[in-house]
Amino acid sequence: MYIEQVGERTLKDCKVLIVDDQASSRLVLETLLEDTVPCTSVSSGQEAIEYCKFHTPDLILMDVSMPELDGHQTTALLRSKPLCAHIPIIFVTSSSTDEEETRCWDSGCVDFVVKPVNACTLRNRVKSHINHKLRNDLLEKLIYVDKLTGAYNRHYLDDYLPRLVKNELRTSTPLALVIFDIDHFKLFNDMYGHLDGDSCLWKVSKTINDALLRPMDKLVRIGGEEFLVILPNTDVEGATAVTERLLKTVYDLNIPHSASEYGRITLSAGLAIKHDDASKTIDHVMLEADKNLYAAKTSGRNQLKAPSVVIKSISENHHAHLPIKRQSE
Image 1 (tube, helix red, strand yellow):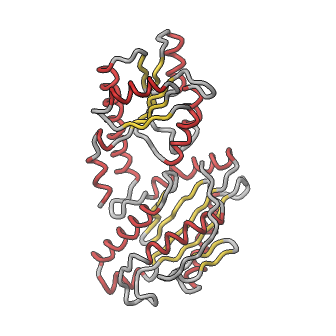
Image 2: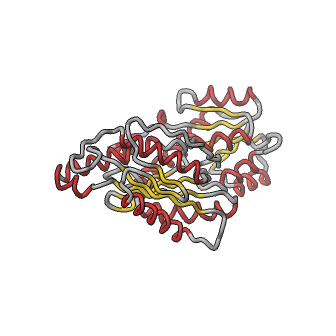
């Protein structure tokens, strides 16, 4: 199971993001860390924010003095995003005054180093904070991840979803929820046995998880053969296109299921969208997605039911061209 790999992550598997407007400073930091941990560099706070929309570094080395967005402002913006809030940030500053130290701590950094950077100090502080993060990551996986499938569990959903809803209301962006169900899964278990059933759950979960393209998109196992995909900042057209692709990907696994009308494992899905409307609770949206899932199953399975959209049976030759309207966070 791929979840077991979490405990085996080393510094070489991690990624440090260096944020500095001076090319010479970026080169110095990269050179000092090249034998310790892989690094990626950007030249501004805005570039750092854009990078973190699609990647999740294990640690950020943040220059304090930068034009437009300085290190403090960039950190505040990253901390406001649910997926970036827990990335450890080490400030790189040219000032060591008490006032500057206090400001660094108040901005939410975990540590800081003073220019000119001492190589030994930098390497050891980076290693210390990444190792601490790896232990926390492993602990969170044990708490929040379903051991059979590698998907997140309901404990994670209870903690993560309320934060997403708050962010959606603050930023006025849509939040898409898609509930999946493996068609005729009880019959599959009865025919092939529970070991094959467990293997099927894992294959489907891993396939969906691998097919989600943004770090902010999350797969949650909500019970039995039922899963939830959370798509932040995604409207109905974008969520429909993503869900269709996921259904097609699982169909193409071609896991035999002789009791299914399609001869293989397929998914049914229900989609609902939460807009920036405080009167429509997330529980209401979940219920709407569940109703749409039921409609998809009663309409022949192997399809998505969404607001004003029904995608008919996904087959080997099905190649719909729906517009993808997904906004980056």
